[in-house]
Image 1 (cartoon, rainbow over the protein chains, first blue to last red):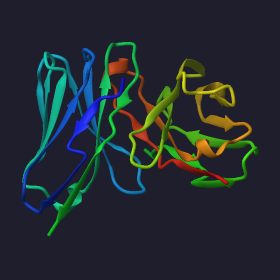
Image 2 (tube, chains in turn green, cyan):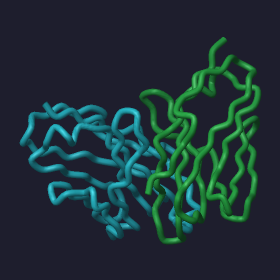
Image 3 (spheres, rainbow over the protein chains, first blue to last red):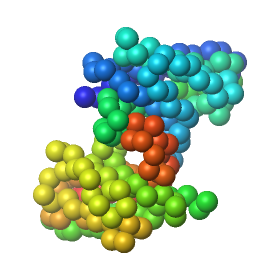
Length: 110
Length: 116
């Protein structure tokens, strides 16, 4: 079952922060985050395994709440290069493949 | 690391024709995936290979679709008797084949299929 992302779209000014949420109706083994720029391939950002860990990648970090079956991606002090569509992907077991959400379009403006 | 390459980048075909796409994964990657993506949607899983073995196919994959990965290197995805609903971006991804829930996928730039 496809994870649900919110918001569907967000527009930011450079330097502002954003949070993108991903929730699943099933118990999760891991959550993955990818960014796709228009006309390009999705690019890996990070994986979070069950256990409630939080990870960071420069000014982009994420958390995973296993009990709530939710993950959030935090973008701080956004830059123009952050523009793109962010997808979360969920894995429900060690033998299951990645299922992507519908995406969140992020646009950072001057 | 030359990345995942897909060929062709674009394909326009008439309804009813057969098309074949090719994917060359990163050389040391033993797992290869095919995804389909339509405008405004996330990539949708189609099938995957562990080396040359096709281990899973989506229920969405009709019998008009067939994928191969001979010798565990490049892969081909063939669509027979194309329909307008097949129009989409077909993405290939590869990985080192770690634990399924804990692997980083490297995507190619995709093949954009338009069925007229």
